[in-house]
Length: 363
Image 1 (tube, rainbow, N blue to C red):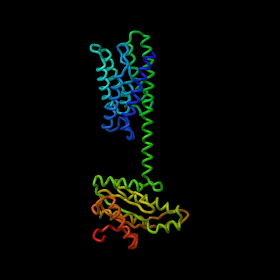
Image 2: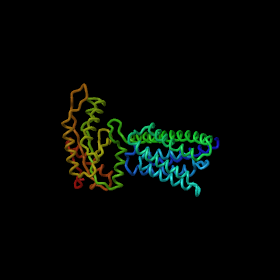
Image 3: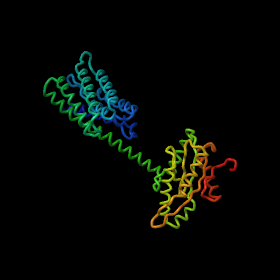
Image 4: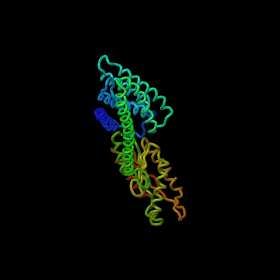
């Protein structure tokens, strides 16, 4: 039994190592389930197929049986990818089992095929009524073990050998299933945490808008793909006076309320960023210069009419100055922002509370 235990340990190590490398490319997918896109489920099936085949090719030979952790790969495929992933993995496992079957000794191959097909049908039915929990994963694994034990009995010479192999087989499959499930869950949590930290690095903590770094990344992407877009640079008029009269807490209230206003008016495909201090940049893909000016005017009017609330002070108003430029006025996306900034400077120099578009003929 010690020898069998050691051989299973090698199979177990192969399983974990394969999981680590095979599922890394899918770490950023928020959720994988039988309801995911066909592309994702096919990817799960291909990954589980490779792992299942490797496990079978490195299986333990015992009498006419080939003992390994293929069930873990099969159940993982069924659990995360449904029948599509399960069918792919089943074909790979049966194919690998055929390769390790000596000529003329097909009893084990036939039994293995029947077990895989029975598990595929059972799992497809069970998944319709089950949630995606560890209990359901364990149930599917237990069903697979239950299907395998009669085959193991038929392929062993004595009851003692059957008992020894069954004990090791059950322990290692349950252990392998548990580790696989927890490993995949923790891997997903880890990369979700990393992704969340990356998103925080691109977010302004006061307004929850995208920050300057996110803006730079977006502009670089626009340059790379040659997207057409317009830019609004928004500046709060006399913001220093707001801070002087209401304190920095009052200024923060204005920034947050204005952030909400800008987000409300910005199209879903656009991006609102805090550029720094009291300045904001609104990136508007596939919006012409004229349309951007019109949107800026609607924002300016809405802000001028809005009551800003900072208790215990009475409600007050603020106004905005804006500069507008579009991608057909500059060679690079970053130059578009510079042109819009020049237009903003004009707006502030000519009375504030207005929207000024960049005019190439006058600059």
